[in-house]
Length: 472
Ligand code: BG6
Image (cartoon, rainbow, N blue to C red; front, side):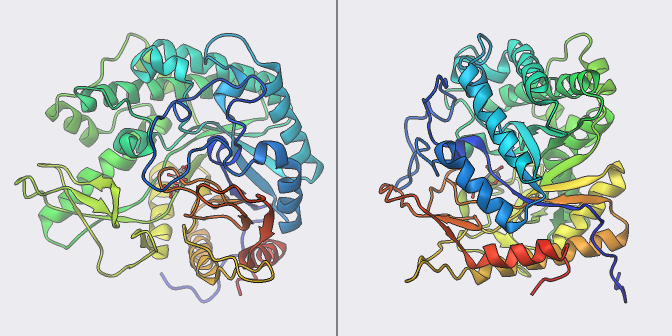
């Protein structure tokens, strides 16, 4: 639809940006923090750093938040490291961990920045992993206990809660993210059992949040990307349906309606990986009602009919670690109409609008985008200048599409791109930068870690000040 006049961004729109604890904080074993599965990792892709120091946000959060405030952030989405709060995931509380996030939240509120808290972003406590991680139902109880502690300590100040970041990516790409146990013999069966446990844990947290905090809002935070069929050939269209169901709707149908998506269930049955459902699980899943949907969007994806000849798997974009495609289900495909970023990821702003529309049509809940952004090799030029025009361009094109979606009638209440400040990528080191603020370090040389405003910093500041009107 083409409009003569676009609807403005709603008043009070939450402009901000995002990070996650293990990718930005550093201080990996300070002040009583326990090891997470990320800290327990023994190897990293060649040439990339570990997460021990990251951007040293743990020690510099005041300086960082002052910069966020200077940009005019209305919101900041960050995650809490479970292992700072409960070092072994299930035992005693670590007062220093409670204090850190309490101070961070107060610092945000000092500048009227709304904290948006992700409760769990890939960094499961390693002590729980050693007891089976999400394969073990006890992890559901541990998560509920952890959630209760967060609500009790921060619920007076935090209104927006996100349960689990990108659960769907942990299931589909756990080996690239380092969150999947590499020793599993039949990973798929195990993964869908873990998935079920995470869904129950999420439902319990949603329920608890509503019980304890009357003013708070809570929602899931998957990565949702609309899947296009590679052509109008009916078999390609069906393949896209399959992948949409397995990648996207499985997660949101359960979060919102408390039921397994039909196609996803048929897929699990065919692959012999339907989860064991304990008595009472479906009731718990049914009665948890999220207040909104948060989702991360980087690009759309394309699928074609499976050829079922062992050649259906393709790397997403050109990122070898993120394979898509599965025999008999769909074949990973690329989209010839889209450009790619430095890392081979396709760029699709129009697909963003379609994704927003599709989610809203399916679920009729307010939406917030909790990640979207461009990873690039930024160059620090003389005089502390970073001319990241490509990032501005990416963000601008995506923000234009949000406004179109708003005009389409989609209820969007915030945009929190990735990332507020440079941090360590999940599997591609710190040279893959996303931030509005440059952190002066290399993969293996920490330099002075000083903060430098990029060109996009000034651009975003103006955009926020105009509530999304001033795109150029
Ligand atoms: C999302 C994650 O998958 O994408 C983030 O929630 C991640 O943790 C972001 O950093 C970008 O991906 P990557 O692999 O480039 O870091």
